[in-house]
Length: 380
Ligand SMILES: *Cc1c(COP(=O)(O)O)cnc(C)c1O
Image (cartoon, rainbow, N blue to C red; front, side, top):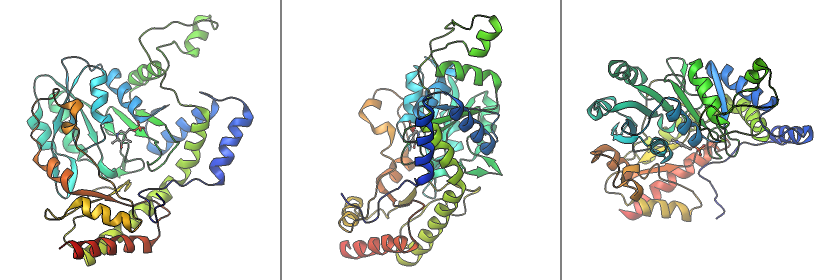
C-alpha cells in the first residue's frame, strides 16, 4: 500500500548513515564505546543517574520485573489499554497482571482510583504507561505506592522526552523502560533503554543484561581477567554499536521532533474543533509537556469505526487502533481476576489513531480532518 499520508514515519538522514558507517569501519560491533556514549547521553538528557541500553523495551520491562524481585504469587497492577508487552513482562516472571481502568474519555491513562480498587495483600508493583506520551498522574501514583509499599515501573515506550513538573517521564518510578522500536519518537530499529537512580538495581540490571556474568571491573579487581563467574540466571538483552550509533543521532533530533509533534497535535485539535467537533481528541490541557507519540481520536458512539478507517484508506490515509485491550486477548482469558474495565472497553471500541510524524505537513492535518468530515457526512 502506497499511503498518501502514512500513520508514522522515521526521521533518518545522512547523519544516521554516517554514524552507522563509522561503526562498520571501526570493526567493533557490540557493547563498546558507542553504546557507552549513548547511555551517557541518555542519562544526561533524562537526568537519570544510571542508564542501560538494551535490545528492546520488552526486554527492559522483563528485566525491571526481575530486578524488583517480582515472581509467582505477586500481583502487578497494569493498564489494559496498552501494548501487550506491558502485561507480558509481568507474566514472564510468573507474577500476575491485574488490570486497572483508565481515567475517562479525555484522559486514557491509568486511573489512580482504579489502581486503589485493585489493591490486595499480594500487590507488589504498578506498571504505568504514559499513553501517547501524556504524563500519568505520577504524584498520585507515588502516594499510593508509598502508602502500600509498592514498586513503580514506568513503561515509557511512548514518552521519551516528555516531562511532568519539569521532570522527565521514566525517572519518576524505581525503573524506567524506553523503546526505540521503528515507530517510536526516536528509533534504532529495535532497541530500548533502562533508567534508574538506584545503584543496587542498576548493578542487578546490568548483570541480567549479559547472562549474569561478573563484570570486567570485578575481574580486574579479583585479578583473573581471563575468566568470569555467573552469579545468577541472566539473558542476552544487549544492544549493538550500530543501533547505539543510530540512537545517538536520533537523540539529537528528539526535542525538535517532539516540538513538531506538539505543534501538529495542536493543529489537529483546532481542525477537529472546526470541522468534526463530535470527535474527541483526548488530553487537551493535560499537565506537563507531552511527547505526542501518537494522535488518538475518540469517535462518537454512533459512528462506524471500520467504515471511517476504510474510507480514510481509500483516500490514502493510514490509521490504526491503540489498543485492542489486553484483557480481551485469548492468551489472557484464564489469567487475571475478572477485569471490570468499562472506560477502557468503551475507548477501545471507539478510538482511532490518526497520522502523526515530524515531517507531516500542516496541510496534511487539514486533509485528514476534512476526509473524516466527508466520510462522516456520507455515512450519516
Ligand atoms: C512499543 C511498546 C512496547 C514494546 O517496545 P519494544 O521495544 O518493541 O519491545 C512496550 N510498551 C508500549 C506501551 C509500547 O508502545
